[in-house]
Image 1: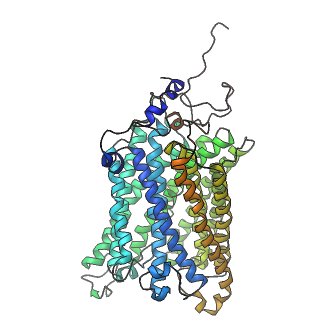
Image 2: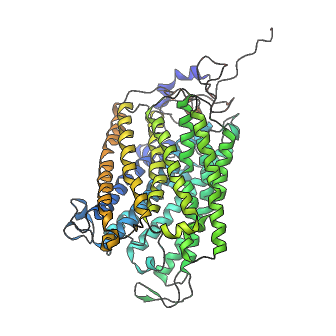
Image 3: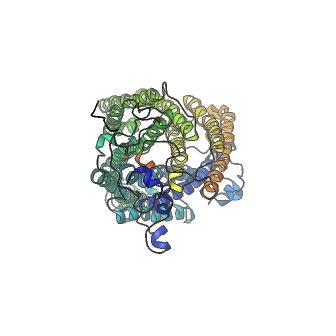
Length: 588
C-alpha cells in the first residue's frame, strides 16, 4: 500500500489496539508505545518531586535556618519548617538521585527509546514485548523504595548520590532502601538495553540499512551498549554495599570500622574500591544521559533547518567515539582521592580527548543550520538552546579535566554549575524539545506553539540566571553540600548571589505550570495532527497519529536515508524514506 493510500485508513487504524481489557491494554501493556508513555508520565511526576527537593536546597542557601513554608513542614527532622542539617544532606542526596535515576535516564531511554525505536526502524514492536513490560514494572519497586525512604526512621539516604563509604554505611534503613532502589533501576535498564539492541539489529524494515538509521536510533543503540556493559558493574557493587550494610561483610569498610554500631565481621575492605566501581558505571552514565538527547536534537535541527544533516557518518563515528572514551575516563572523578600522579595524567589526557568528538557534533549541528531555511518552532528553539548550553557545559568541563585545577574546584559550586549546564540546561531542554516535537505522534494532537515559545523563553532565561552564577561562586571556592557555608566568614559575601539564584530557581520551577497546562490540555483539546505535521522525512511520520497496534498500516520499504531535505527530484522540500525513486524515462 502506498503512503497516500495509507492516509485514507489513518483514523480507523489509529484507534485499533491490543485486544483485551483495560489492564492488559493500558496497565500491563505489551505495546511499546504504551510502555513509552508510562515511562514518560512517571518521569514527569518524579521531575516535579525532584524540583521540589531542589527548592528545599535553595531555600536553605538563601535563608539559612529560617522556617520554610509548606515544604519544610513535610520534611522529617524539620521542626517548625526549619531545615535541619541532616535533612539538608538528605535533600542533596535525593534530589540528585531522583533527577538522574528516575527522570533523565528513564525519560530518554525508557520513554523516547520505547516509543520511537520500532517506529523509526519500521518494526511493529520491540523484539521481546514481555521483557519490555517488565523493564517498566521493575521501576515501581524502586519508586516505592526511594519514596518510602522519606518516611522511615532516620529519613532517606544522606550519603550523597555517590554513596561513598564508609560514611554511607553508617546509616540505616534509608540507605538500605536507596541501595535496593538503585539495584532495581539497574535491572530495569539492563532489560531495556538488551531489548533495544536486539530490536535495532534484527527488526529493521526492508531497505533500512544501518547507515539509513536516523541519529536518534544510532544514539539509542550506542546508549544501550553502554548500559549493557556498565550497569552490571554498578549492580554488583550495590549488592556488595548491601551486604556490608546488613550482613557485616567488609568489601568497602577498612578493618576497625563498624556499621550501625555493629562491629564488622571482617576487615580489610577498601572504600576506594566503591569509588572505582561506581564511577566505572557513572561516567558512562553521563553519556547515557546525553547521547539520546544529541540524537533527538540532530533529527529536530535537520527537520526545521530544512537541510540534510551535515556530516551524517562523522556524527555516527563521533557518538561511537564518545561512548568508547567514556569507559576509560572514570578516574577524573577521583583526582582528589590521592591517586598516583601518572595514573591521574592518563585519565586527564583521555578526558580531554572526549572534547574532539564532542566538537565534531557541535560543528555538525552548526553546519546543518548554516544557510538553512530555519523554522523557529518550539521544538527548534529548545534544540538550538541544547546546543548552546551543551557548549557552555562542555567548556567548563575542560577545566575539571585538568588535575591541578580540579583539585581546587572539586568540592565547589563550579562542579554543580558544570553538571547542571550539561544535564538540565542541556539534556532537559532537549527533552522538552522532543516532547513538543513527537507529541503529535504520541497523542494525535498538537501542542500550542505560542505558549510553547513562552515556556521556552522563560525557562531559558531563568535557568541561565540559576546556573551561570554558580560558576562565579565556584571560582571563589564556595563549597557544595554544606548546609551553612556562611558559618565561615570567607563565604558570607556569597549570600546575596545565592539569594538571587534561589529567587530564579523558585520562579523557574513555578513557570513550568505553563508546560503542564499546555501538555495536559493539548492531550484532550489540542488541534488534531495529521500523519506528518512537521513535513519530516523520518519513517515514524509515515505511520498514523497516534499509531495503532502494529504501528504501520502498510509495509514500509526504505529507499533512502532520513535527511534528504531539499532534494531536487521532488517538488516538496522533503523526501520521505518510503518514497521510491522517480521512474526513469528510458525512451530519452
